[in-house]
Image (spheres, one colour):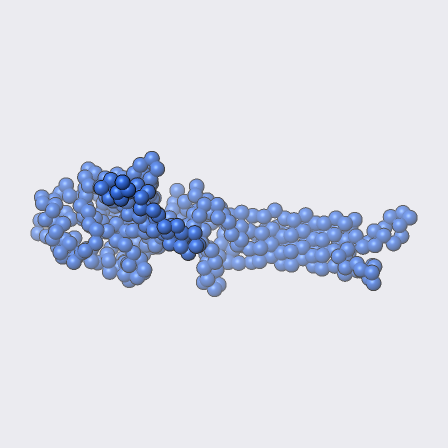
Length: 373
């Protein structure tokens, strides 16, 4: 299936039915009074986030979604039937923008989250609503209102905890296939990955996280080189970035560490040009293809010194799995700590935070437990 992460659609909700102006006329009841019913409500159009959908391709071809009108009211107190609503199912992570104003309307980042794209028109009132002690035979009834009409742009940002960043052929697809259930295309030529891939990394029966692989970024992407910044938006929801650097070089006349440092700085600059918030996101340096390096420890030290890198750094070989297990365990530990921190901050904001008693902290060793004897 072709991956589509943008689509423009038009939604037109149904018009409400008109109210009826009618009077009861039966044998022996010459003045039965008003009995005109209300019009039915027009069809509304909703969007629902569905985790079983991973692309917006359906809306690339079906661009117009028009709701049906409500039925008109009738005599004998008969109300018009409301039109059936329309539900558009979209991937989790879809953002809805108004094309005319550019305003972001909705961010569907939870499964089964439901929003109204266009509200259906209200049905008109029949003349039975206008009767009173001074107006026993009202002839007025109201018209149904028009439904909302909008032109919308749908933009998908995939939801993942960890994002992979790096040049083409840095080993991102190999890594995600090694540590998760994702099976992206892998080949020995650039731009093998043409669309984002998501994989679930399971570190234990009760712990897992989602990792995202996007097409490789190259120097000059801000000017349209390669695939440009087309897929960088998918990294904006991640919580930490893994910057993969290839520390091997097939060219014998080139120092692989100097080349790796140059490439890493170029990618970081492209990231900063695209979005400073994304540039400031926590980023870990991952040295890949250790199986092709004579002295991995020396290579790591030289690269960190060349980049003036003080953050987390890991050396791995995605091909044979060396170092990948330690990496995912450390990622899980970091994500769990961030989750706990976020929950504490939320509880403090809600006023429901209760400080933990250190005597019941199971994460500490026995030597750290207080002596209550």
